[in-house]
Amino acid sequence: MTKFYLEDLHAGQTFVSGSHELDEEQIKAFASAFDPQPFHLDHEAAKDTLFGGLAASGWHTAAITMRLNVESGLPLAHGIIGAGGEIQWPAPTRPGDILHVESEVKEIVPSRSRPDRGIATIVSRTLNQRGDVLQILTAKLVVYRRLAA
Image 1 (cartoon, one colour):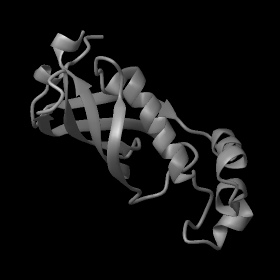
Image 2 (image 1 turned 180 degrees about the vertical axis):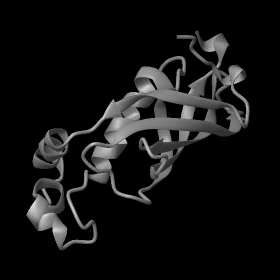
Image 3 (image 1 turned 60 degrees about the vertical axis):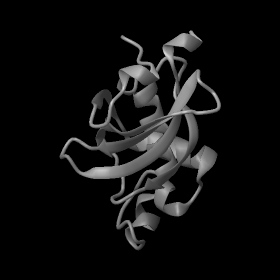
Image 4 (image 1 turned 60 degrees about the horizontal axis):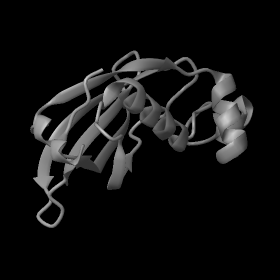
């Protein structure tokens, strides 16, 4: 896969990742380890919550988003290095969802003090197989210029 440097990116540029199928076992394993709330662990307990049924932790969705972007979605030279951001979960991620990520470059700002890099603002939307947007991540990423290589 071609790796992109700061000068290869432009506003409006898009990237689409591969996919990941999420099942109940993965949801419960992640929740047990990192977010042990009843609506992530138990169907019955989840029925009477805001989610109305078993839902993946938002942090699980974020972790899958990161993996998809690293493996196939955002081919940035020197890796995906966060400098800040905002995350939204407009809909729950459910067992059986097949996730993929669609990312768009919104802004490129070369650093004035560090000529070897800049900041790219990228919006990554994580969608399921029906096209429902499950997560929106607006991230400011450190992206290196070719001269840094």
